[in-house]
Image 1 (spheres, helix red, strand yellow):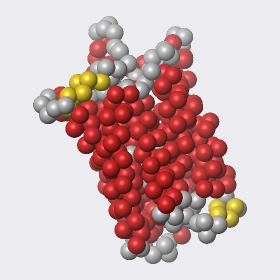
Image 2: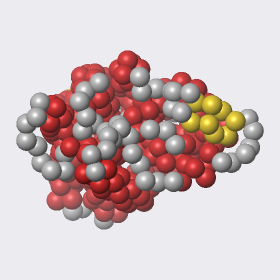
Image 3: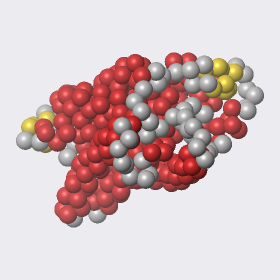
Length: 356
């Protein structure tokens, strides 16, 4: 057990390093900071809600830099799209931090964070899961007719409506092959920035779906571009959280040590799969995190008297991260086997490609 002086608690170092590694793998793969998993996990480990939020925002900024460098090498970043969102992201983070500090002042930061997590993540899970299942089925149908399938396919048409909004200036994102009103991109940045500041997350769990379904970018571009935004929102959020006394730097250090390795692997793994595979992992991470957050919320609302809930919350938090890591590793291995003509499960071929 290590004593964290700023937080005033004792917690095992290896739990923080495992958390950093596993969230690094998942975050590098689906383009999220993983704060929607880490902030609740830190609360379960004993950190106060406001410290959990601030500490995770700081950890996310460091991990985002590592993953962004790798995705830039893979060609998954549209800089026009990323830089256009920056202003909105900064404004959103400021509003989110103010909201967090208000809940902190009235002593409700923990319940507020957990309740918000449950509601938002469950809604995103439903939409992403249903759309991705339709895309998966469509790829199977195309493949059965002997037609070639690219790295991306989505059935949602929401982005067509947003791209048709004629409010100037109109931005041309060449790499993402998107032409859209600048204000749509800015508003996506504001909305996700608020979540980043309040939940202590990079905002990726809603920004990636927004980039894919609202802006119209491919999943791979959405992942890489979002990680650039995570560096901005996480970095600014870390500064604001530090100024508010919400960061335990020792906890950040231990998580970063694990994330340095995990983020590299997760980023590289995206080159083995199609867009729907990434969206599947995103949706599964959302429902698992929702379940874990719900357990923790019940524990808090019952006055922290049912110790079994606290135990299962910790087990579930670590279990969901390990499960997602194993799923990602399995997809990479299946991709390699499929490329070499070896047998794989029937559901795998529509989701994987030969590594770029």
